Length: 350
Image (cartoon, rainbow, N blue to C red; front, side, top):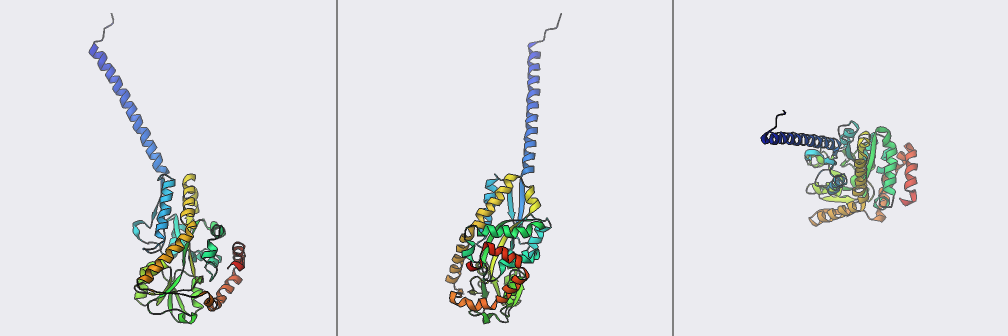
């Protein structure tokens, strides 16, 4: 006759079975959650972006605006760390080299350094070639980006944006520039090599390439007597160099937002699109805002005692005459890129 289980045994058995089932469910849930978390972490990306623009500078808010937009568009799956630790580790050419070597995937780089990849890219640095009016015309920035991309793509780089650097200012501690002759014999800092240097030499001055973070020290130690810089750069050094002079359009700094193309193509489509869209909306399309930022900063510096003077329109002919040789030599050496640029901005529009 079968043995009848006691109520206690039945209760214990049911309890044991439910406990096993609960434990199994809990373990399975933990495994699924762990796998999901691991998969999510694997899809999340943190990218390092380097540049050599010394703080404080009005462009910083646009950098961080882009970073915030990327994080928002991707729900935090793509985050960007700008100059980690707040240090400029890759000034000038080094920032471009860091991307090309795979050490970092992103940089904002002064266009002068693109000439190290292809000298033809010096076209955008030629004197009196670009200005705010030209660059704010619909579609011009985008077409310039596509032109530059044709030269960089074979080198594994992708252009994501074009940033207004500045219609630069000559700033000095003692000298006041009013005529081309006032620059003769002076040691002047420029941001990068190539065309910038040729422009300064055309005034019989001595150009020296110095990163923005080293301008103040170079001025203090007599390595330079003045500098070609942005209003942001002037603001950082205005106490040591209070005299500013603008020659509109003579040396117009631009920065390109460059990515390692293989890294970019490896991003999930949503992240890649978010980065490219944010670069367009927060950088390329902010040209007018950046111009206004610079106007405001100059007004602030003047209100605090700095001296600022701009060559009037009817006085530019003398300056243009002195740099004709720079432009002519470049056009003769690199005619193809000049024709490509003319298709974007006809000669009569400049």
